[in-house]
Amino acid sequence: MGFPTDLEIAKAASLRPLVDIAAQMGIDPHLVTPYGRHTAKIELAAIDELADRPKAKYVVVSAVTPTPLGEGKTTTTVGLGQAMARTGRRATVALRQPSMGPTFGIKGGAAGGGYSQVVPMETLNLHLTGDFHAVTTAHNMLSAVLDNHLFQGNDFGIDPHNITWRRVLDVNDRVLRNVIVGLGSHMDGIPRQTGFDITAASEVMAIFALARSVQEMRERMGRIVVGYTHSGKPVTAEDIGGAGSMAVIMRDAMAPNLLQTLENTPVLVHAGPFGNIAHGNSSVVADLIGIRAGEYLITEAGFGADMGAERFFNIKCRASGLSPDAAVVVATVRALKVHSGMFKVVAGKPLPEALLAENPDNVHAGGANLRKQIENIRLHGVSPVVAINAFPGDHPSEHQAIREIAESMGARVAVCTHFADGGAGATELAEAVAEAAEEPSDFHFLYPDSASLREKIETVARAVYGADGVDYDLAASRQLDSHEHNGFGHLPVCIAKTHLSISSDPKLRGAPTGWRLPVREVRASVGAGFVYPICGDMRTMPGLGAHPAAHAIDLDGDGEIVNLS
Image (cartoon, rainbow, N blue to C red):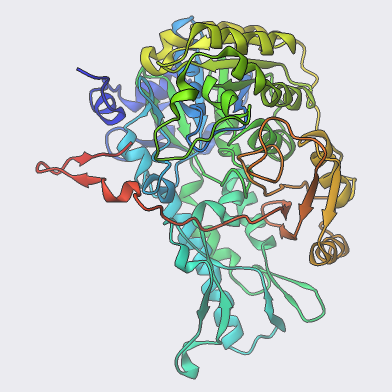
């Protein structure tokens, strides 16, 4: 009999009542609001009620630059949380909520995998408590208010050709990337070109993830820039009367969701901003609760350390005021062999046979990527730990090659089998993380608030990506000048680029040098509190592949979900 599917493992889980899971965190039942039998929300009052308790060690899980298949970062985060309990330590895990677009596309769900999963995985991947729907509705409410403002006379003089607020939907649907609204009679609105992004790319999602309270969320909603006048003056959601309704829609969603792992470790699942467009981290309020709810708070940052971890350090930690104590870099034999430049991995297709053959030299050949990502963690004064996520087809000599690369950089390293063995397979990692977290922290941001936007972009490009410099298209240069002029220059930057390379070119493997970062556009997410330069052809609305998961996910004769991965 083969290894069971993730869904089969999840359905066989023995779940504890969530009031008991909350009790492990020191959270009283009056702060737990059930959503069905195995999901709950934790009231934000928990932040104040737990304030006198000691802070947990704060650990972020990142990775090498991933292949299109992903390297098991969520699985490792969950496995580490479970391993902490097996080594006598109390831990809480904090994760983003998966977007249903990728779940029904190629990527699949994001509940972890094997025996290191968040359960119930069907609930986590499909709707959960409706937070994503709240984000979608709040975002589109502002879109409706904006178009109504234009229809009712456009009192603020918004330039119809300089409107930056689009619409969103939590579905991969390429035909909605560019649309024309307002067609029909004159009573159907003002015709204009716009489009849809996926909900995870919404600025409302980023605000949701970064606000420290409902009140702060409301203030940030008001600062959203929806467009500009003909003279270049920004017009906000507050100006056109849309912010209050958005905040009302989002109020209940601000409470983090409580679930558990297969081994009953508490998991806070909250918010889901994109990892290559937005900052790619779970919510600040979940962390403000989790940081007082045990001995370790383990959270995950999207994609490689050049992406989610850099944003975790320079955007999320700026917003939360929390300082990390250690960082995990997940590495796989598969990924480092791909970074040798000798292999190509395509989602949905079998791995090349040559990639599966034992060859530690190929692992060493791709080691530059791991070395650079370890360096990127250290740039922020944080202790790195390399987690070798072991796959069944790996060879011990190849794990040894990764160990040699990590140790040459002075990083702790552990081989993990948590996919097959659950928490027991990550106890070596738990010990290494605990040791790293005890080291004196020298955490610091990569740049000061006072630096100009160009200085911030160039600092990240050179220090984190290894670029020789930055080239700005004329439009991007004008936008940067406008953002500085409008008072947005103090904001951090969230550089939107490919996640498949440390560079801006997805074809470049390892740790490329001798290249320059091309910035073609610079948008301001003022409510979220960052400016995001766009480098290359970045899609904010994905499309479906030839054989998406949507073709297979179904209900069986008993009404049970099947083929969800």
